[in-house]
Image (cartoon, rainbow, N blue to C red):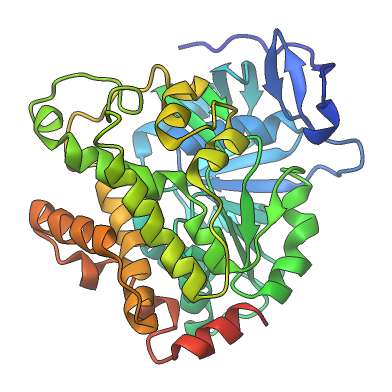
Length: 394
């Protein structure tokens, strides 16, 4: 599919535009081109799925040189032909990429800053392949980290004896769906989210790095707050399990709009309470989910039920057609499992998290409490509750 031609960007002119630095308007669509104060950098994006394509378009639109690393040889072949990715929706046009490869060595040699845009469950495999080719000065940004991704990746790199590589995490910013190997529909772009490194001091040092690409991101209080500021981890597994029968029958429905009723949304509210209990146990705060959605996309924020149903980007997103989906495997393994173990360490009860982990384990046939992102993988297994609080705030 040949992508459309990119169009000229015009500055946003609207009320409170000053709170949306870097956003520009093309035919009433918000975009984020390069600030004049930011020099173009050589960027590597790992992943060629939904988020990888959207992120490559966004960064290319900022005039950066963008290369892609993927294990999908068919995508290497198809994207190498035109070296452009097309986008529609909140970002529209045809965006050049420097190259695409399946070779980690060649990719690392040409990439100063590496964005990992795969599912979080693939991080260990991805980082294992990167480690032999990382060098001091490489900067890694985990672009859909889930809980503690920067801790897990940093530990792997340090255990391999590689020094001088910084790791930063944030949340995915795009509600998007790939339409072809070289074309992506971007339904929404989050207007705000948090970022963090494993320690507070490292987060402060990394602030200039992340804000040159995403100026409206905000530093988290610590890596735990960053990890729990994730509406997907609250909503995805519960919505999948509440609707498991129609999903397993491949019956179509709108995932966010039709996934809950005013009664069954109580399950999401309990999940949010569990997240808040962990936050309080580790001396940090949880932003209410209805407020988080308003910050992300704009919506009614009187209650969680209305917030979910009025997010513009959610109006056309359909449910998965299988239970073997990242909404369970990724969100449970990479957020609920470490939260459950942190809660146990702090002596906090998390009934909804426990229930979802147990049901997901039965459905998947995989002991997620062992195969998921355990505290051992984060380097926290031998740490006490108080030691973890001290470490994240150093």
